[in-house]
Amino acid sequence: MIHTLAITGYKSHELGIFQPSHPAISIIKKSIERNIRSFVEEGLEWVVISGQLEVELWAAEVVIDLKEEFHDLKLAVLLPFVEQEKNWNEENKHLFEEILINADYVNAITNRPYESPAQFRLKNEFIIQKSDGLLLVYDEEKEGTPKFMFQRAKKEQEKRNYLIQQITFYDLQLMVEETQWNQS
Figure (cartoon, rainbow, N blue to C red):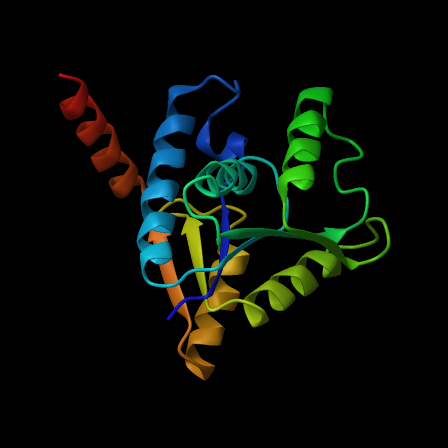
């Protein structure tokens, strides 16, 4: 049973998404929502993100919306370091602040500003240890930043019953087709 689910995925530049109104965002969010709903029906209580831009923040928006329907669902934001958003544009900072305000738990894994890539490895390690599974928007045929979390999760699977659920490009294409079918 999955009580705590970590979520991560690609950055927008890895997906070729450069506008907040890009139609692919709604497809990704629908796919995340479908997965979360299925986990909630099986007892999911917490969704954990590290507050990274794009997929993680989109997932947080989905969770915040779902909390109106599923009152026991909670969102945790475990930042790899403080001031993660320091160099982000104003629009991203605003979205990030909204998510932090609506999260049920917020903390930094290292209570220091960015110092080294080791903080990202520590974040991956900590989040995998504190969760029962990982949902990631990631396709092994197109490497990107989620591969590090994916590799760490695969190592965790060798030690314990740790779920890895991927949303691949094929899954996203099926969601596009289903959405088009439902609209016609």
